[in-house]
Length: 249
Image 1 (cartoon, rainbow, N blue to C red):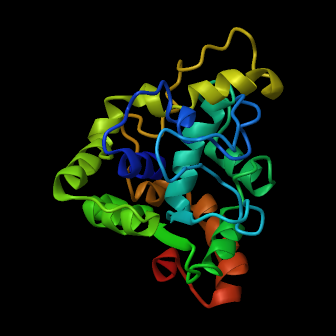
Image 2: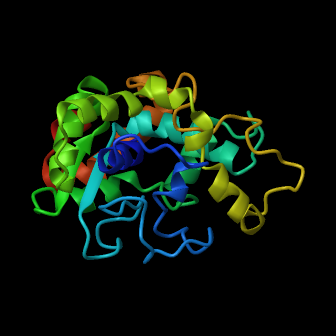
């Protein structure tokens, strides 16, 4: 979502791409996708997507960190990652998936440590902290914040266009442009995906129908909720005194 917001802020309406990664490359997957990280972009400033921790991300840029309630993130991740990895629906339970995330199977699984790294840098002039829930509540206001951080001035007409083209409704109608299928085709052999697996049989788009919601984590089984709460206490509360995501926001 933030990738589209940034791209629309810098272009004011550009959608001439098969999938957004073509114009906003992943930092650690660009090489696999045959992209040159030093190349010019369709507009300035250049925009890259990353899930790297603050201590690992490439230096010398500005960074927009998007945080989200870990319970909602888990639900979203559970709907995305197995399908992206070619795992049939129902082949892994959410309990098994949660254990796998805790076990470090996914590079992106350590959300608490990820939060902590960026939390420590939240007041740095080159870091903008944005909450997913605030994007849902006030997209226009957050677009203004992001544009100011990017150093891009938006007149009212362009702001209107960016808001429209960054809305869930607009992006949902164009899911194919935000579903990572370009990356998938480049890395499927490395991931060991079966040749007969057809990408898209199970929707993996971040703007899939029914996606982009808040509060979904409230429906998690009590065992998982307890696991998440315990991890929060160890990784966040004991270091910051923040007892919940609501306080961290």
